[in-house]
Amino acid sequence: MTMFTTLAVLALVFFVAHVILLFTSFGKNGYQKKRYFYSHLTLWIAGILLFIMAALYAGKQVSPILDVFDTVGKQALILGAVVVLSFTAHTIVRYLVIPRFK
Image 1 (cartoon, rainbow, N blue to C red):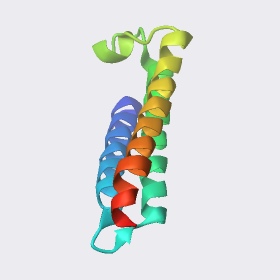
Image 2: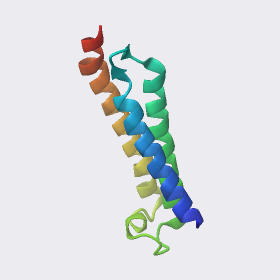
Image 3: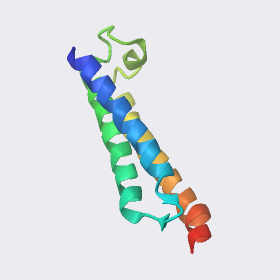
């Protein structure tokens, strides 16, 4: 397995873990704060892995998607998107979901 494939699989695994942890943070047992934190952590790790992939492979014709992120500014947008996604999810959970469990 190449380094590119390894990083891509890891990013996908962490993103899937993020989704699973996020949806299972709320349920019959109420709000599970630790699991919710881990859901955010796995999202950040997935974003960092994508940033690393873009830094290593952008502009090298390994992936047409990564070739779009051929400058440091464009690569920083990946981390910015992760921050915005995390903040948006946190806001929705804080104001719409958690009040239902109180």
